[in-house]
Length: 403
Image (tube, rainbow, N blue to C red; front, side, top):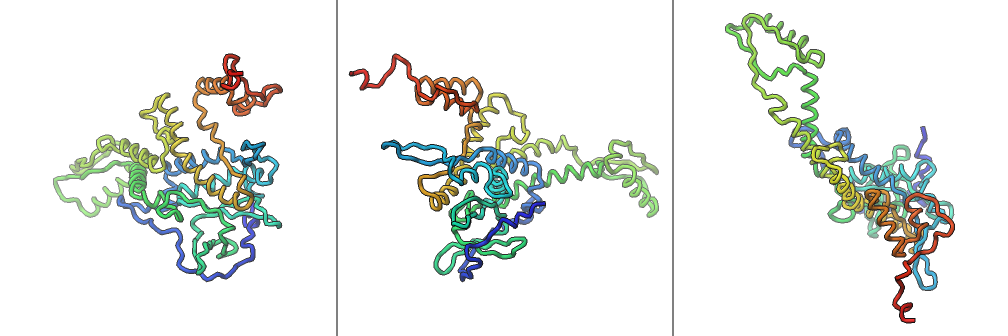
C-alpha cells in the first residue's frame, strides 16, 4: 500500500514555533438527534442517501477537467489561451502530486467540503520555490490560528509526524457555506435531526425484519400461566417465530391462549412513504435532484433533463466557483495574475443532441465559433481549413456597407 506521508514536506523552515493567540477548530456540533439516534460523520456517511449525495457531488465535480488558462495581450486585444507549456498545467489536469490523479484530488476536496464544510490542501513547492502541486488534508485534523502578529497559521495532526505547523502560504483552504467566511458550516452537523430521523427509520426497518415475528400485540388467556409455561412460551416465540427464516409462519397457541394485535402495519403507518420523504429531504440538504438518488416517483423524461441542467447550474456551479477562486488566489500569488484555473463544465450543460447541434450550427453561421472550435468542443479532432470563422454573404459590418 502506498504511504502517502512520503510526499509531505511540512513547513518551509520546519516548525517555526510561533506563539499562538486564540484559535478555532472544527466545532463539535454533533450528538443525539431528536429521533434518539447518534449522528456524526461516521454514522451519517453509513446512511445510503447521505453517501449517495456525497458520491454524486464529489464525482460530478471531479469528472470535470481543470484547465490552466493564460491571458495574453496580442496587439491590444486580450485573449485567453490554454497554458499547456506551463508545468502547473499537468498538475491541474492529470497529476497534482506523485501519488494521486486530478480526479482523486478533487474528489477528496469535495468529500471534505460537502461533509465538513471545509477542505484543505498542502501546497507543494519544488526546490526553487515554484508551485508544482497539491495534497489533500483531512479537515477533522486541521486547526486554524492567528498569532500575535495577526498572521494566519495552521496546525495539522498528521498520523505519522504528529502535530505540524504550517504557514498560510503552504495551505489552500476552500470554505463552504459560512457565517464568517473563514470557517465553513457542516451540513451534517446542522441537519442532524433530519438525517437522524431517516437513520431511525432505517434502523426500525432493519429491526422489524430481524425480529420477523411482527408480534406487536398481547397474549390473553383465561387463567394465569405458571412460571414454567411462561418461560416455555417465551422461548418458543424466540426460537420458532422470530427472524427472517421464521417470518410468515402460523403461530400455534396452547392452553386457551389468544393473540390480539395492538400495532398497525407498515402500510397503515405510511412507513415507506415516510422513508421516501426523508430521502428527498436529505437530498434537498445537499441540493441533489431526487432522480439522482433513485427517487423516480414524479420523474418524466422532460423534467429529469431540466433537473439535470438545474443541478449543474444551481448545485455544482457554486462548489466549482469556490474551488476555482481559492485556486486562483494561490495561482495569482505564486505564478502570476495572468494565469487562472477553470473547470470545463461543457459536458454537464450540453443538453439534448438536437438542441446542441442547432446551437453549434447557429454559432458557426453567425461567425462567433469556428468549425474546428465546435469539433473540439464535441470531442472531435480539428480538420485542415476549418480554423477561419465564416459569415453569410448577405451580411457584413457597417463600415463595409458604406465603402
